[in-house]
Each structure stands twice: as structure tokens, then as C-alpha cells.
Image (cartoon, rainbow, N blue to C red; front, side, top):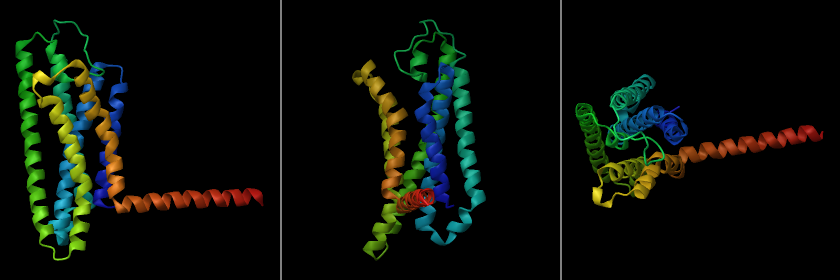
Length: 252
């Protein structure tokens, strides 16, 4: 029932979606859903950075700027943008004729590996243009995240109490860790030089950003978020009490 909790719910859905994409049988379905969930996750992480910025730098405006309607609109925009990005890339990629067979040396479908099999120069350039556009959007989100954290750190360092500083930092660390893990794996997967590329390394890197990174996100947030710890503790206590009551009723 808080903005961060609402965004965490959406983030967990994208993480679950990323992990499940490789079980789809069709190559187009794998590519579409992987792009959809990963794009949406990146936009959600950008929105969550805005949430932390407002909470720390403009706490008096938090309820106004991040009301339930505003949060729903921002989340809907993230999902819609991710869907549009995925739809454009998937439609263009699978409109390309393949002249080198249709076998990929990978455990799921990705755009770079499909483009290697293509023999359409115009389609290849069209896909490169789409990639450039989404890279510009992603870079804009990255600049926004960096700028927001610069302002956050400046605001936190002006807090006179070290205890309050630590409390403020602790609310940002999970998000910062998730963003760093997400961006580092994506950048290493697609921006590393060809000299250090190999089929086995490509397989490991793809597994890292499509499965391992989304799997770690819930643990990162759970370990650092006191509200989540308290909620889990209450849930366990409730289940335990319910089990004891049921057992007592059965005995009587």
C-alpha cells in the first residue's frame, strides 16, 4: 500500500517474466517477451529512482507527487513503452529473410544472433535504427538515474545526524544494487569487444542477465528492506498461529 511496494510488485512481475521467457517454444515468442519484460523492468527501475529522489529530496511533496493515480499512470507507461519497444523489434526482426539457415548457437533467441543469419541489408539497417533509438531512450533514463542519485547523495550528506544518514542511504542501496546488476550484465553482454566473445561465454552472459539477475532482485530487496522483513515475519507468524489453532481444534 505504498508507492515503493507498488513498484516492487511490478518489478517482481517483470523478473518472473524474464525468467520464464526461455520456456516458450517459439523463437518469436521468446524474443518478444524477453524484450518486453526487460524493457519494462528498466523503465520501472527509472521510476523507482524517481520515487527515492522525491522521498529524500522533497519529502513534503511525496504524497502529492506519488499518489496512487500517479503511480498507476507511471507503471502503465512503463509497461506500454516496453510493449511498444518489443513489438517493433520483434516485427522488424522476423520480417528479415534468413539466408544462413535458422539454427542459433544459443539457448534462446536474441536479436544479434538472428541478425547474423539475415541477408537483407535494408532490414538490417532498419533494425540498427530501432536499436539506436532505444539506446538513446535508455541513455536518457541512465542520465536521469545518475542525476537523481547525485541529488540524493547531496541531500543525505547535508543531514546532521549520522543515524538518519544511514537510514536514508539504506532505503536507496537495494535499488542502486539492482540497477547496477541489471546494467552491468546487459552492457557486458552487448558492448563487449568481439575479441573476448565465444559461444560458451555468450551462453553464460545471456544466462546471467536473463535468469540470474532477475532471480537475485527479490533477495536484494528483501535483505535490505525492513518493511519487507517485517511483512514476512508477520506472514510466518500468522501461518504458524493458524497451524497451531487448527491443530488444537483437531485435537479437541
